[in-house]
Length: 60
Image (tube, rainbow, N blue to C red):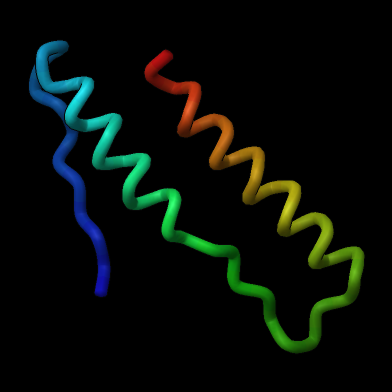
């Protein structure tokens, strides 16, 4: 099932938007193709964690 989130219409909606975004992001995991090397997996993990960090700090 795909999660959809509506962007906030104004500043008053930001807290609820951030909470919902965190709920969705926290249950996601990177998908690693079967033929990946250890270097590929490390790069994917680093990129995924950087994306999560950017999303978490976007509203601070």
